[in-house]
Length: 138
Image 1: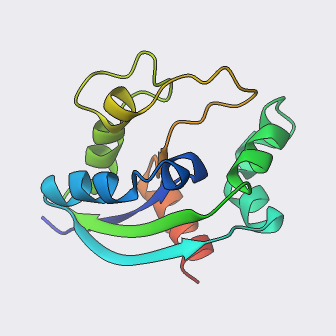
Image 2: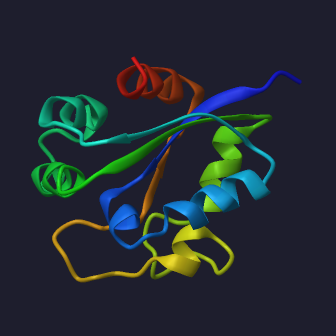
């Protein structure tokens, strides 16, 4: 089978808590290849384009505010079924119910804020991965 690529983001909360290395370790331990890594301070236009499908929703502005609150580590990862595999590795969006053994289940928690700070993002489909990788690695 041919390898696919995905975008993984270590969000500002993960970077601020010093979890980037642990997250990268888990990605590599799963057998995925890190193709490119960048430390990025994302501006509003990049974030608005990345999260365009959420525009108009009540959490859109708090999400952009959170994602622009500090550095983000953008990762281009490659591997067989890496999109599906990383999303399983990341765990449920809500860290409170994310299973132990997942990134969010082991390292995340609900901080009671306006927007869920859940450490990582992973593309949800091959179409999303293609679009998101162009945004973050143009």
